[in-house]
Length: 540
Image 1: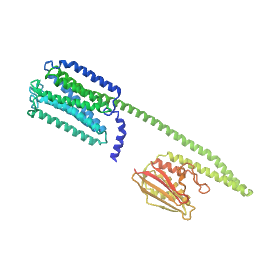
Image 2: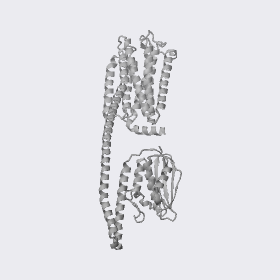
Image 3: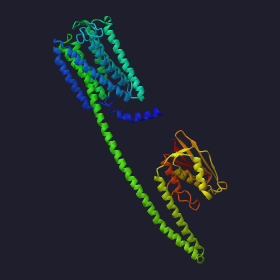
Image 4: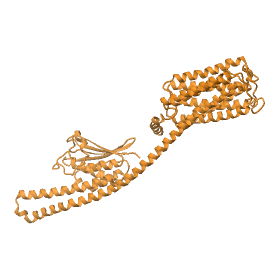
């Protein structure tokens, strides 16, 4: 049941999640902005390209500042993407978040091993090739995980229901995998650097560097091409393509078209890398701010709706009080002339009955009977209005005992009928209101089976998974199922009053009371073959 409830909640949130940065489709204005960003980056790249090999002064502090900012940006981006994975359950986001975490960890290891930054030859047991190889591993790992993201998207690994605990465990596994991969590659670049071909000679590149960096550069281009072919693009994918373009410019300036460390290409490429790292983070933060603003607006709207609901509730309470007063006033005003009519008819019958013929006495009896019927209708209407508005005070109720009490209060009208009351399950209900239900249903069953030589009434129940169904069955007049929808309407009758007396309000009262308990009412029957009236109460 908990999983079903979680699934229903997720389905409710799924449509709203399409507005999240990682799932929202890119609009035309956003695509134009991304193209402008790539175009300007390309112009800067082309302008810096002729000066890429110009040697500048070595500034190790630049590396420390740049790498620190880069690590912070990548870590925050990874955290935000992991959070969106937990919310949306989209496996491709997990791959991308792992990619950003991997770049943050590799950038940290790269900075620690950089010669002259924290130690003359770098920390972590770094050798002359370690830092360069870490840069290659770092810049190959991210586009590889972007390719994994694209492949997962194309295979349809979209959002799926996952408990928060399970999603958190998956995130922990991804973090562990990123840490393990970083540790293994760092160990290979330091302790195992002899297994790798030399790509640095002092601060200059060796011929082998061209093949290695060319492969890394091509991997970024492949990731960009695969992502560009995917349609339609989400807002995240749009800016991820901008990041990959800047990533290509970064590798080109700092590892392809320059000579080595501390030249123009070296510095310019790293500035590109920092901007690329910050780009998705900036857009993510902007989108989170927008969503937070929408949340505040929704909260303000909810508070306003709650205030209006309270005002409406207060108005309804006042209106109900006015209706009660009006109903009693109308009841009193109607009863006064009825009492007068009945009183005068009684006096005529007592004082002048001997002087009237049979037709006159019959007419007086009709007047008195009609007045009595009108009085009972007024009483039933008042009961209908009062019971329909009364809030049930639910408590455990012995339904069998309640049915027996209702039968006992029917008095003489129940004589001659064989009424059996089975063992009935308890219910969470208002005992006073539920007694009206039993009294009406059992009383009706006795009345409509009263013309049978052996009137029988059966009261029973059965439990269902979500509700308990109670019934009252008789072998009386029954009814045609074509008219079943009229049974519970006020003053709706399927038989003439001469056949079966009554006001036609009792079943309406039954329906109102059961509905106020969160249940439902229905009936089945056949003409001259009896009827069964059911009501169901929810299991709580």
